[in-house]
Image (cartoon, rainbow, N blue to C red; front, side, top):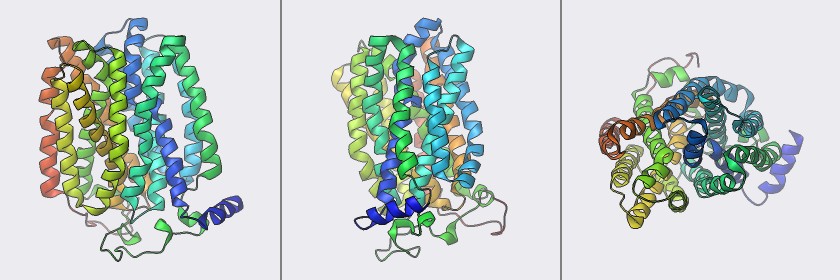
Length: 428
């Protein structure tokens, strides 16, 4: 810890060390890219062809594996609260790189599901949860802005990982591609975690935002203070928990479905995989531009209105996906979908500390992230069924568009700051 004090002291003479933590978190979010649906989308075709699997079999394996991964996340949340984000992230990064390197060895549907489960639990679940937890611990008043910058890592991943994966598949095949993805993950993320990461500002004698603030700053912007730190039991008694969970479930489910089948949706309209991966890049640029904007808005605008607006943007993405007919409609979809991704990534990181505080954040995140990842696990299945039984993705794209609209209304009308309904001594 002495070395941590020394590093923070040197850098702290110039700026608040929390911004270094944002950079480490951004790398963690970027490194989770191989476990995200925008990367899997590039591999689905080659894997299905090699293993002789149907779309529904692939989606079922992916969904079941993601569900299993989700059910393990509360335990990871408990470990996160006990060990701290630094130790948790170091362990997860080491295991995640190993899982990537081994994924190319899968030889059938069962082992494919096991591989999916390992990648989703370690990358899409644990690595993202630990990164957002660490950044949330360092900020209160500017949490939305900090998390908006952190989640730029996801937008950069959308630009890099599909293109990189497509290039590796063409040059060395999909199996060896995963080996190199694992190696680069180790090289990229382990050194910053070991050298720079610090779990909480209190570990080095600092406070969130770099100053000791009350729950409301001089500009009237509220921040979550210790008096608002809910235990898991208290959070589960609050209606806000379930409205937030339902909203994040919807965002995760439907954004995942669009990521997972973007290449296939484009192919149905005669647009090749190269165009699809380039549209991932368009979405990523939009996401990169908009994530700091969305993060800043979360710090300033009423949260319930932000949640409702984000769900409406998701509906627009689904409807646009159903009417893609050429290059320009594909680009328009990619731009709106990029905004949906900016919304989704910011909200998943921001909402739990916003409503329930920092002290028991790992446990609350663990349960919340479980619900979110269950949404992701179900996401590909409706579109797979639509394709297999109706010959098109369009009927389901239009049908599921009503889901975010419904929860947008619920959030706008009923999402409010939670009030404790059990004693402060409740068991976390």
